[in-house]
Amino acid sequence: MTLMPNNQAAWVQKWPAPAKLNLMLRIVGQRPDGYHLLQTVFQFVDWCDWLTFHPAEGGCVSLLKTLPGVAESDDLTVRAANLLKAETGCGQGVCIEVEKNLPMGGGLGGGSSDAATVLVVLNKLWDLNLSLEKLMQLGLSLGADVPVFIYGHSAWAEGVGEKIQKIIVPEQWVVIIKPDCHVNTKEIFLAKELTRNSKSITMTDFIAGHHNNDCVDVVCQYYPSVKHALVALSGFSDARLTGTGACVFAQFDSKVNALRAYDSLKSKWQAYVSNCVNESPLLSKLKVGGYLS
Image (cartoon, rainbow, N blue to C red; front, side, top):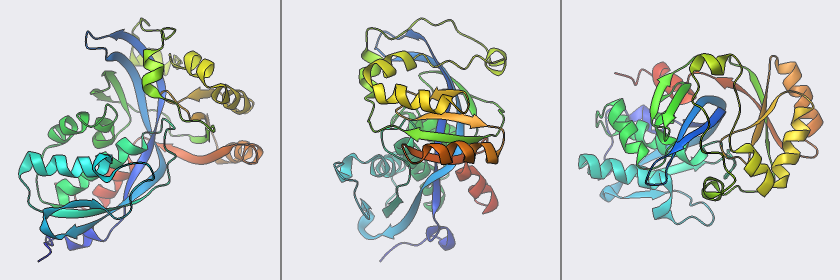
């Protein structure tokens, strides 16, 4: 018999998995195990994948539809659900339906965000009652960006991205361009040309305008289409790379100016317009629905 918890209404809802932007990215060192020590600022974009969870018999975890080229067992959403089951001994099953809107390989964190939404929502649907800190710890084992999506608020992050502190930044409109390439993050972090000894800065420095991304020169060297996108977008506002890309973005003080840039770019580029938010759409939905204890 299919198990259905008391919060039945939550099972038929679509849950957001938002994009993120790295408003700044500095590489300030490297650990002996090869992982890079970072300083970065995360902000969410009100542009999301959407996940729906369907109770499943037999305790199995599956996808309603797999992504092309990704084995079901390797999908981050399936791994996240199975990780929850292994951690808690939960015997329930789920079929995960993903409406994929965020481009893959763009540096927007789509896969990590999907995994975070699985951890956060199934924690509620399965009545597991794991703490936010525990969910973030589990998320880190799936990917360095997963904890901030679980955290749910714009954040200053250090370490490998797991040391997170809340930050408030202006909520502006944004135009995002996805160049026709898929940046290999590992390749960028292994590049001999990559700066690995940037001076650490403070939140005050960032707010004062220190917004550089240490990956941008190497990414532009290896992927010329990213450089072309930055040049095209810089004609309208300060253009920046998010993470290791491939996506580039520019923020605007008004929707009118953002749409003007978008309208000029959309015929030649895969472009999107949205707005940046400090509170994750997932956290907002949890609050509105009364799912937070």
